[in-house]
Structure formats: structure tokens, C-alpha cells
Amino acid sequence: MSIGRRDANGPNAAADREIVVSRVIDAPRELVFEAFTEARHLAHWWGPQGFTTTTRTFEFCVDGVWGFTMHGPDGTDYPEWITWTEITPPERIVMVHGESRDDPNAFESVLTFTADRGATTVEMLSRFPTRELRDEAIEKHGAITMGQQTLDSLAAHVLADAQQNGTQI
Image (cartoon, rainbow, N blue to C red):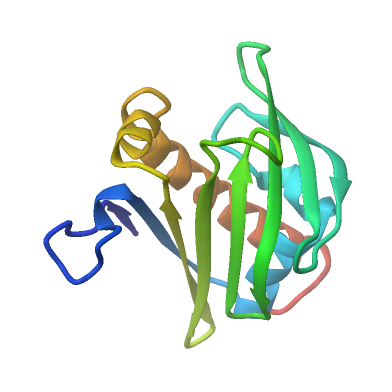
């Protein structure tokens, strides 16, 4: 498990606008990748603890859109919008995530899936338009903690789904 921010003094000029969250999941990369590609999976794990997700539209392809609402544990609804800009199965997904297509504060996320002896390391790198928006996501919205909870939910779902379907892990 790894969480945090990249070194802003390193070679990556965008580092001061990034959040990185990662987790090792004890399942094959193809199964973990599939959990990101089908709405039937996403409804079971997308979001931090206590949140649920309702999908309005879902088309998993480059330039496709996932329109959904996250329902917070306090009853607040959060409209969300994602479009995929790059898909390389089962290794990488790049997407833009905001409240709507024209959200000026939308951020880019790069998801990488690295296979390692039957397990998969998932890394979610989120790159915000400004350092201030990144800091707000961390301080006001708990982005690092919520990102880790989301990956924990993903891991639990992948393992439960594999058991339910009799998939060997």
C-alpha cells in the first residue's frame, strides 16, 4: 500500500498537482482491470466507505462517458462525469473526472495495473489543474483517505466476485 504526493522537486513538473494512491490486490490483473470496465462491477465498489454509486450512462471506450451519481452516507448526492482518453487493456486507463463535461476543475486520473506473480498493483495518479485544487481535494474532501478506501473496496469486490463465480485466484 502506498499513498501520498509525488516529490515536487523531481523531474515531474506536475508533481505539486498530483495525488498517488496504490494498493496490491491478490488477484490476476485481468480480473482487477475488468472491475473498472463494467458498470455491474462499479456499482459494488466505486467510492469510499459509506458511499453508493448509481450509473446513468456507461460506455467504456476512448471518448466514452460514464455519468453517475455518488450518494454520500449523509444523503448528499454528488453528480459525477468521467470520459476515458486512453485504454490499454489490461495495463492502463486514463480518464478525465469532473462533475460535468464542462467542469473547469476536472482532473485527469491515470490508472496503472501491474501484474506481479498472480497479484496486481493498482496505482491511481490524479493530476489536478492547479496545486490549490489538489490541496483542496486533500484537505477539504479527504482525497487520499477516500482514494485508499476506494481501492480497499475494489480489492474486496474482486475477491468476493471471484469466489462467487468460482474463479481461481
